[in-house]
Length: 125
Image 1 (cartoon, one colour):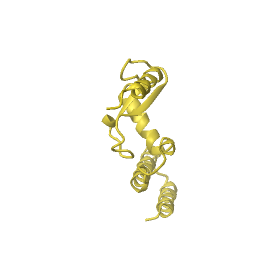
Image 2 (tube, helix red, strand yellow):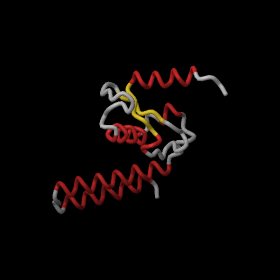
Image 3 (tube, one colour):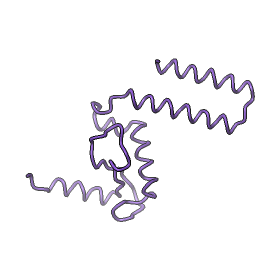
Image 4 (cartoon, one colour):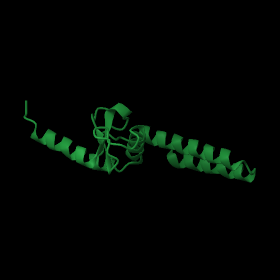
């Protein structure tokens, strides 16, 4: 089903529900579920693996993964517990586009820079 058709159906449903003057809380919850469904559909239909990495980091999917990872880490660096500027760093790119929390780590800017410096200085084996 095309996304535009799905959106039109959602909007038609929302319009009919508004006409029935539904409870605002249940309406908001329903809209949230529909938006989650649309995002899930987009995630499944988007080829994140072949997308340039810098573009991937701008997607709604990655932003959501990053926010969830930071919330799971209590908005602290997972190495030094800093609450400064936080970055979500991939531990592996194996599940790109379908990351699990274990695939990423939350690092403060200083720890993130140290990590990348260590990788750059590591001897080739």
